[in-house]
Image: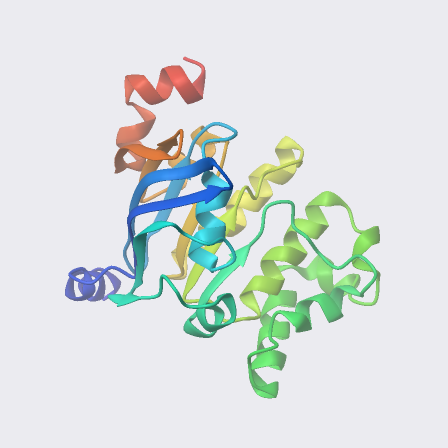
Length: 246
């Protein structure tokens, strides 16, 4: 059924970024970025530090102004739509560096993610977050700033899920985590994808990201230079040399 639904809706991607441009003052962070994400896909974008990955995520979320190109969500141009309106559409980001509110409890952090949802949806989201991350339930009255890095990443993902995303943007989820916690984080991402969630993943760990991705893109110097299935990019000599160390 899932495959059939994807085929029926494939003509209109959930997310389409067309030749996007963005700058910080005189610095052109994004020069020509084009990305397509269909419903139900897990799409990975990889690249070196400074390639423009986080800028792209911020632009899609609506917190980074664009200077050219377009962003479409289910065929609708959202290029000038503010960030709050994009969240209401279902575009939700897990930011780089987690950015939890350290002086608030775990549960209060989670509830902030449901600020645009009804009370019933908030309670359902909380139950789902605790089911997915039992450790957060154990620490629900603890201040978020006292959590470990891995626990804060769980909290950041749980907070995003509270908003009931239709498109989940994940920016460098493995950053600062031990290898064991990286594995656990990507297991969670795979589980969400298996449940049918549409995920656009930006990640410096190219091997792990492309290993689980339906499709992938390579971003270099603010330009998307390669694309293909995750498996094809893993075996591409250019990707191997530049990002996999082989």
